[in-house]
Length: 198
Image (cartoon, rainbow, N blue to C red):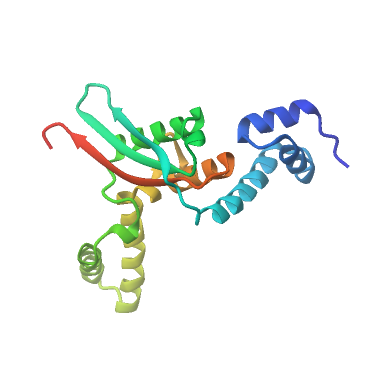
């Protein structure tokens, strides 16, 4: 059996925000490998986040972010279940990071289901026309168009965008990690981005 020391547990807790016993168990399961232990905790956290996603989130805060030079600004409504969590530094930091991300990337929608059908059909039509000009068969053209449409969602939908501070994570991953860490459902209510002269 692998021996786990207090320092290893402490480092993993700082990295993941997990409880002491969860961190120790993950390290034992990972045979002392901190990367593998963090991955185990992340998977457990995402499972917990899925269970919490149906719960009402009627508290939260409005975060404002004005980019340097005061030419771009964002207002973001982010919700959680309790006022207690809304006042924590971690929740405020999450809100700030997402507002800053919105300022940098200018998402048009929160999620793909928010995009009206006409816009989706128009995008798909454009992709199909481009692909057919290349002489691809119809069934292959359809699959390629679906792939391009998925990429379009990744570009214009906030939850599917790669986080600017850590491109390995999408915004939805960031939120799910926060749900697992804070123990409450967290949702983005709405956001608006202002740009001078736009």
